[in-house]
Amino acid sequence: MILRKLLIGSALLIAAGHIWAQSSGKPIRIVVPYAAGGGTDVAARVLQAEMTKRLGQQIIIENRTGAGGVVGAKAVVAADPDGTNFLFGYGANISSVFNKTTFVDAAKELLPVSNLANSPLLLFSSSKLPVRTFQDLIAHAKANPPGKLNLAVQAPNTELIMHMIKNATGITFTPIQYKGAAPAVTDVLSGQADLLINVWVGLGEYVQTGRARALLYGAPKRSDLFPDVPLAREVGLQSMESAAANMGYWAPRGTPQDQIQRVSRAVVASAQLPEIVEQLRKAGYAVIASTPEEQLRAHEAEVKFYTEAARIANYAPQ
Image 1 (cartoon, rainbow, N blue to C red):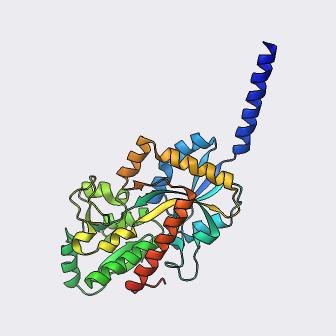
Image 2 (image 1 turned 90 degrees about the vertical axis):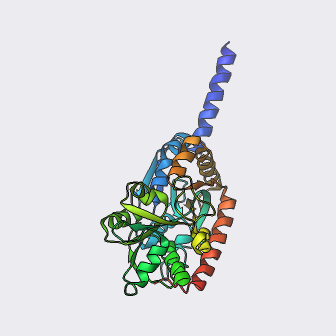
Image 3 (image 1 turned 120 degrees about the horizontal axis):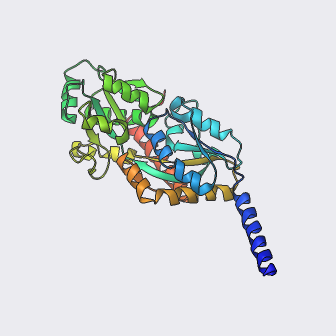
């Protein structure tokens, strides 16, 4: 009996030591490089509690805005690579495709952890704007001076999509720069901004109450969340489908691979829970939950697409 108790006690000590090696108990900081309340911030917080439970460490979400996500990304590049600092966002958005002088090459300056989801985008209009369809928007733009329509730009890729629409239709927009989706949504609702390209979570509830309108959806098939919203391909903007961005976790270079894998497994396991899948679906996201290797391949393909799209649309970062 005494021997049995000693063996059990030893096993518990070994297990406890293993857990400690995996987790020091130090909080994990996840930097979201966009404003609180926006789509990226919402997605990060959907996993916050489950990730805390699985990793045995408190998850702290920190919003670091500026330069289309580059400010927050650079903070993570410079952070201690001890396995407690991560970036949550869009790797392609912070690249040189969208940022002329200040940018982060995620493939070289960060390490992939996991893509959480893909985010097909919608074109929204303020209810103050006298349009109900994309065809109405084109007619309204052509009936007014060039550039009178403005578009709230809260992420670099949305400005490129603006140029893609301009290239396909001939209509022009005046871009208004925002540090995140939340303040852009506020101005669309008030009529200060005419248009916004964003995920469903940004303005979806306001579309349902009539305070905003959804004109296009950039995905291969219509969504059951908003089945009446036409697809971009239905009006000749099929390229908008490929502009759906991959949203995921990145770590500073030098972060130990065992910590990368540990967090990656926690992301994948958390994202497979039905309640989390449903929360992300209602926000307009399609869950991916990839391995680091899959994330890097997807990132490289995404940068390649945006580079070519920028060339075709004659888009150059400012």
